[in-house]
Image (cartoon, one colour):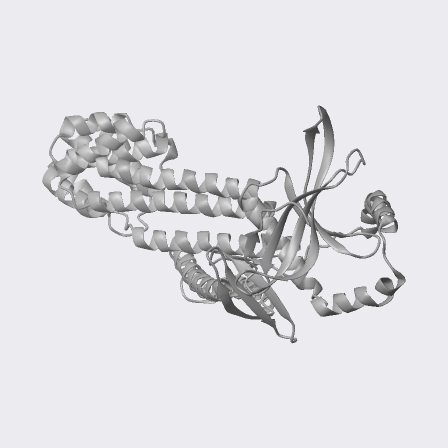
Amino acid sequence: MRKSDWAKWLIVIPAMLGIVLVTYVDRTTDIWGFGAFICQLIAILEVAYGMRIAMLAQSRKKSYRLTPEERHEYAQYLYEKQYQRYPAVANQMLLVMARMSILLDNYERATQELEDICIDKFNPAQLKVYYYLKVVTAVVAGDTEGLQESQMRYAGIPDTKCVYPPEAELAEWIEQRDTVQMVEALKKVVPDKKEHPVRISVITLILAYSTFFYGLWYGINRDMGYEVRYRFAEISIAVITISLAILLIWGIVSLYRHNCQALSIQPGKNRVALIIIFGAAAIFTLLIIGMSGLSVVFGMDGAETVTGHDSKYTYITVQEDYGGERRYRTNNPFVMQSMDGLWWSSDSSDIMDAEEDNEESSDADTEDSPVTEDTQNGDVVEDYEAEGQHDGLTIQNAMLAVYNYLQENNVLQNMAFSYTANAKGEIYGVVSETQETKDGNTVNVKYCLYDNGAKTDADGNSCEELVLEKIYPDGNYETELVDFYLVNTDTMQVTDEQKNTW
């Protein structure tokens, strides 16, 4: 009994922690949308509820092997401690207690337990047992009026499983007041329900995992560059499709058999019609499962290859079916994040207007600087070519790497990443837009990352150097240098140079 209570909390507590974790991830990241968040919650509830049912099934299965006295005590414990608030379950426990009391020859206690039962929520099988027990107790008590009523009601409920004693035989036992035969028949006429805790657990895990995976696949925020890892998706969709198909076929066959027995359908036209109906339902559902699986397969337009590791991330390259290449990074086996700049601003005109004042001030500084005609026409071009014309995606990936570095180290407040461009078409990254106090005034501040060209780190690795600048969009103060960062172009590892001067 105590083990059952502990097992309950071993299910409830992880479920609560799972809900907290999923809610935390949803509130602190942009990995998935609202639909995926709801699917993760549903998957957790499916696991908790299904495992709870499996645990109860296992408890009932064990109780069937107990002696009548032990089983009566167990049912009484459940009735008094756990199920008083649930009338339907309480009635079931009282029915078990009454049956065990009769098997223990305690007819007075059985009579009282039967009196406490409210039969409003009983199904026909439970009513059949109930009135059989009433017949037995009435025979022992010599209650002729109660015996006649109980016997009549017992006879009026059909015996669908053919395990109850025939009415003629029961009438003979009643006439002879042969309670021994009645008690012996009681062991057979009330078959214990077959419990399958393992099967319940397997079905629960299949349904919960399917909800989790489909929610993640269709709800992941691809606009922010996130993707489900292809290897994880390949394994998951194969397992889910096969499992759901087997579960569906088993369910359809079981439901067909149940309907044939419940409706007493004999072989013939009626059974053929039932086969057609259930067959059509099975084919339609299998088509839905197959189409959902194919949609996932077609959504994986490439092959995933691990290309590198560092202390925080695994780097992945996806070779697309049509010849392209995409780069990702990840720190888990489920989700990967794009490194190829999928976050371009959708409205470039608004960006250009917002940066116009800043560009004018930059142009003014340029006009004041002493630049010769030769430098403008030749030297700058030669220097630029000497440094190398860097790939735009590499710069974007480097900016994204620095943004994640800043976010992981809690360097800035109100962080949100986006790529923008100034009026000249030069790309830079916005990592934070917030308000700060300066000289006693509250001012608007924007932190931006700018490319400072290719550099080489202390180990001789090729890197991109990015500059973090603090900009005052309202023009109240001059732009400030905050820090410089080197980003390894192969591993995207970030190194803080810890300097704020050119």
